[in-house]
Length: 447
Image 1 (spheres, rainbow, N blue to C red):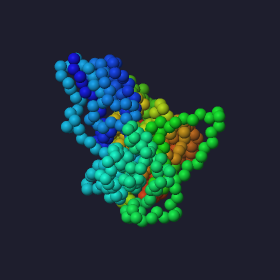
Image 2: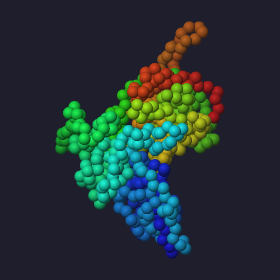
Image 3: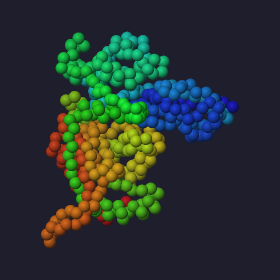
Image 4: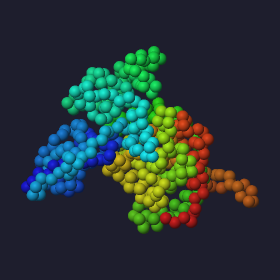
């Protein structure tokens, strides 16, 4: 018998720690190879940690809700092996800071800093934590720097986490209490001795009355992240939405023709989502200034086209896995990628890196029978496309013999965009270009 040290595996370049949600196995339980031992959560995604060996779980070193660093030993498993093994030698671990949900990983390309890092390195003065003897997680430090919370103020916060640690919720509660106020970029660059203008109001929340028959439901961790991210997006961007109605009759007829043979050949379905993503990728190549981010008064033009697809989870929450370099995949590759990400999203099998790096987002409202919507921009992107349900409608068609009315398959597309940097001309042209690609679909195309 030997003891195998199970460590928290590396989950992506931008992930340095995770929170233990639940121990699936308890000390004394038998474990098979690749069987889930525990469930963990990062700021991006929830996932499971499987065991690379079979044996008996002997000891666990962390409790539920505790934060664990990547590479730390989290449990020991008694195995039939001759000597002790570790999944990843600690000396080989690379620790990188975790950023808040709205901040994407930093990628340095062509000498241009990514939006997320630029916001932290060039605009916001870093907070010096060296004077504090208290432990703060990378997420808490990042939020404190972004909100302009001094080390002295941070040390005063009573932590509700394990061993009195300050959590994300503690930071949010501190801000909402009015004890600190987030100012604009210009005031952050000034000395801390400059007084806050009287016009800056404290954040207030309206009280809600609760009757005896009401049910109070606590938000889960993911719903809190989504709520914070959505409110932040509305406060950051000047949202505008443009609409286009597209005739996708040829597209529908083509899919009806190929879907059965494709499923029989590949063992999976071909949905409309990869078709929409292909059209979006083509339109982005035509109008690349929709594929940007904003850094103060700078516009960061993204080289890669990474399209996020909003996916609903069984819990009712939303997650956005990202198809990297979508413009380099053909329709077959997009179909495989969409089905794989959607399937693993529902099973909580996504890796943290698979929800990062998006440059544009698409959401399919038609899945729920909705004909149109006004989606909220997924920061730090500047646009998000919503596609509605495809409905049969009478439509006027121009022919060489005159106009006729026929039954056509029609669909609304709506593009929400950041009016700070995307004008109506670009926003309207982009959603129209996507519709043009869908309307001109080749009914004889093979896949």
